[in-house]
Image 1 (cartoon, rainbow, N blue to C red):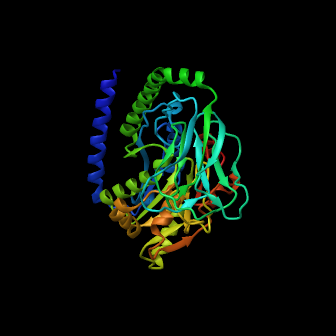
Image 2 (cartoon, rainbow, N blue to C red):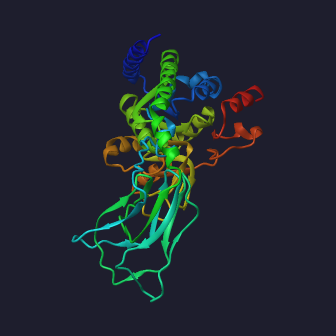
Image 3 (cartoon, one colour):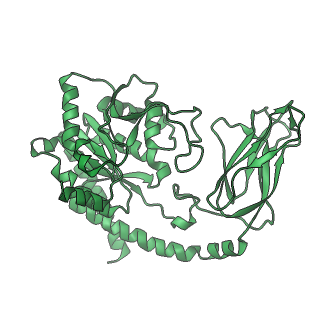
Length: 417
């Protein structure tokens, strides 16, 4: 069938789903389970529908539980043409200059700014560093020679750190911008401190880069076909199951906090449940246990802003990698529940919806939620039955949630339970 047909069908399904979403508002569910899913995880969603989604919800309270998959919009860039696997920013490298640089551009005048003796960066294409440098206004406080150090090798995907061996005294420094080559991502911390060192480098594989960029159109054409196939499958899923909530975020890891926040806001607005649970599509959820925990809270007349999960205390920030945090100034995160499974009450969900326009998104949705809720009077319920990692298969049904399960693992566990 033509692309136009599938686009029209996708639009029709979206309109129908919005209508169904509104009609069902009259039946307020006690619990809505939001399963965060990637668009291409068709097999994983099928496995969940055929395992715990149907077999662990007793018929006596099935009407009180609504389970939904949450997906964002497709990133239209081919994965090889993105700056990194966790975002949807296009990789564009200007290789016209023989020598490339990353350094602080000093201003003639302006406010004095704090300085830092570290400079973090990510390499987007293999480079060879030719020179390390420090601003000429820097005088070491001890009178020793200045040493600027570069840690580890600098290949594609490398996340580097340049460090100065001493502090600078008497430094009066202003800056209008941090100059960063298109072959790098220069990491600015939330403090906006100005790095006082930089470096020069050369690309090591210019010919390969030229060929790579020339082949972009061909890669994009093949990727468009992949996206179209996924879209057709999603349309069929929505028509058949009516259990998918689409958000307006590009479906990449860096947008996960926004994705979860929008999903919670939509559910609050349309369904107004008493509790919302968030989990992932690689997780087993024992709804019977979840339901029993909610009933126990209600029997004890516990109300207010409730958060149930397996909480992490004094969790240190990562400087590099998928979970690198450059937007939070603390050394450790506030109390937060691991993202494989947690429950929030309607009061928490309503607060998030009311304040979503003012909430800054950090590197992950679990730590973001912890930071957002840290000033509030939250009733925390630490429960280790919400497993944060994989467990022995014999123990799986002892837990409320278990993570890191493939679709094959889910089927195998249910065949031998």
